[in-house]
Length: 332
Image 1: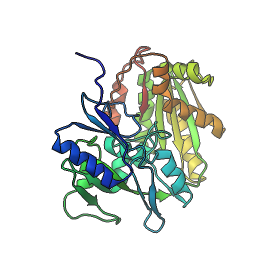
Image 2: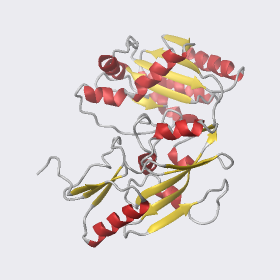
Image 3: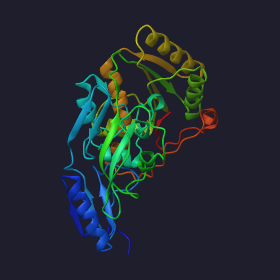
Image 4: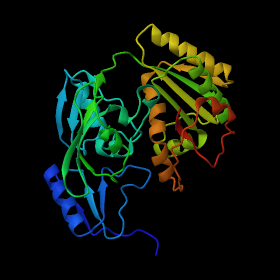
């Protein structure tokens, strides 16, 4: 029969030793084990299966160490993404991966799914920042993989193999991540209003072909904007079929020059209107709309099938017009 099948038990360990004990017990009794972070994933990897043990990492929320000299942090898997970012900022450092669920999702879940985020177009995804992992294998054995150094070229990249494995290769109990210096510039945002997805895709191709590299590059269609407006009453513009958001984080005067170049390419691609956002609050509201797109559609009661796809930039020009029944909220 279909439908939701209940778990046999839920455990909430606080340490690696407790995780290892749970995994070993499940192995002895041939009991399925499902690791779970905050449950914000869109692929169903944290969903229980019939008779399983759900291992929740929600109580493993310690930031073990932030090393300013080595620019790294060591955290337990239940640490929330935004909490790590805030803690790193106190040391003048920055953790770039920022999935749309960053206020709620955990670093362990981000590693398990190789989460990207708004900044991935310039700064990469989670795998680019994972240096080392502590993992409990299916037999309950605790192993460490990876390194703490900037250079690490010997042997297999077992830490990289674990990233994106969604709990199928082991349960992650500690993560060492690379940090970057905290950004100090004032971001400049360019917003393009387009009548078709194809025109917005052309703008993306033009921007990248010119060698420009926005720190965030996001596309939101009218369906998503309407859902966010209905839910949060934000008053965001819905008159265009597609909004394209580009943000630069370069220092001045390079930021002004890059923003102007992006603006020119938006216009060259046929934007109905392209504007600079000089209001940081307004710009944040637009990017927040991107983060809230899927929750807003769920609040509306829509059934959503999410496919995280990617295609070569040059093929954007072949995109078909936006369908009102197929919402798009995309990192370009």
